[in-house]
Length: 442
Image (cartoon, rainbow, N blue to C red; front, side, top):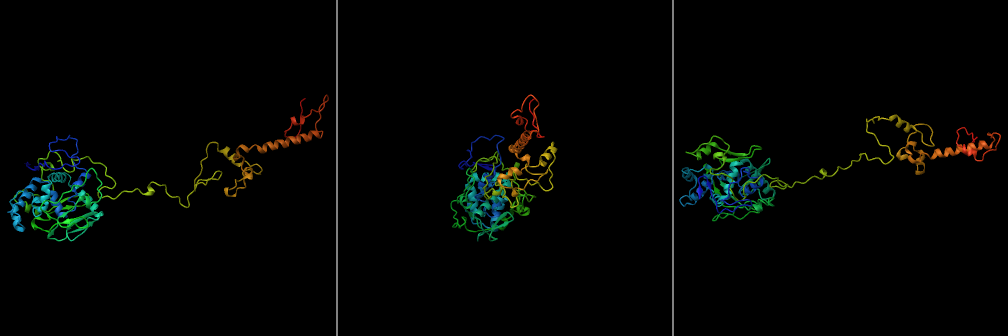
C-alpha cells in the first residue's frame, strides 16, 4: 500500500538490526541518525556513480513515492521511446520533483530504486537529515575503492583528485555510463562485520557489459537530455559539504510548482524529513544506531600503526652521560652549584682529613682511571671513606707506644719506693702513656 509521501515495503529484507513493519515506536531517547558504519554500508552501491548522477539519485530518494510512479511511467509503452525535447515536454505535466524527472532518462536506475524500496527509504531519510554525513561517506568509499585499485579513469568516466576530494565525471560530455559493481569486491576487505555493504543486483531486463579488471561494469551509454542533466552537484568544500543547485535551471524544470531561491539543496519536507515518516525506516542497515568508535582500518582510512619510537626508549647518543661506577666522582652539571646543607662544616672537616700514611690535610682523591692496585687502595683512601678498616693503624700505634714504655722501665728510669720490689708486668699495666713513663700500683 502506498501512502502519501512514503512507501510501505512489506517484502523488504531487514538488515542486521532491522525489525518488521509492525514494530512499535522506539523510545524517545533512541538514536535517530545513522552512524558512520551504517552510512558506509548504505552508500556502498552508488558511491562510485558520476557526481551529477549520484546527486540526482540522492535527492530523488527523498521522494520515494514519486520514484515508484516515475518507474511505472517509464515502462509504459507510450513513453519508452521519448527523448530530448519530447521527453522534456511530456514530463512538464508530471507533479514530480526535478530530481525524479532527471532520472527518467536512466530507466535502469529507476528500476533499481523501485526494486529496493527499503534501501531507498533509508537512503532518503539519511540524506534528508544527514546531508553532509552522507557526502562524507561517499568520499570515504571512493578512497577505499581507489586504494583497492577499483576506481580509476576509463573510456566511460574520468576520475580525478582535487586536494583530498575524489571527483567522478562522464568521459564524454553528452553520454553517461551507469556503473554496476559488487561492493564486496570493489572495496576490498570490509571492516564492519555487523554492517556489510548493501548489494543491489542488476534489475531484471537490463544487461550490463563485461566487468572491467577493476570490478566495474558499464551498460550502454545514455544520451543526456540537456534540460534535465547536471543542474545539481555536490559541493565538496572542506567544512561546508552540501549539494549545490542551479536555481534557474531547477525552477525551469519545476515550472508551475514550488520555486526555490537558495542554491543549497534542502529536503522540501516538514521538519526536513520525508512526509509521513514518524521514525527512521527499517531496512538493510537496521534502525539508526548510536555512534561507536571506528576501527583503525575503517573505510577510507589506512591501517594505523604505532611508531616504534613512540613506545621504545630513545637510543643513547654518543655523548650521553653514563651512571658513574662505585667510588667514582660524579660530574657536576655546568654552572650547577650544590647547596650547603645543615652540618656542612662537619662534612668539610671530613673531606680535609688526611689519609692514613699520607701527609698534609686536604689531600686530593686520585682519579678513577689512576687508581693503584687493590692492596694500596685502602691506604690511599681518605679516612672518611675507609669504613670498617679505619681503626687498623690506630691499634698499631698503640702497640708502639707500649713498647717504648717497657724500654724506659728496663733502663732504670723508674724505681719502686722502699718496701717492695718492682712488680712484674707493671710496665705493661701502664703501657700506652703518651710520655713513655710507666707507673705501678702503690
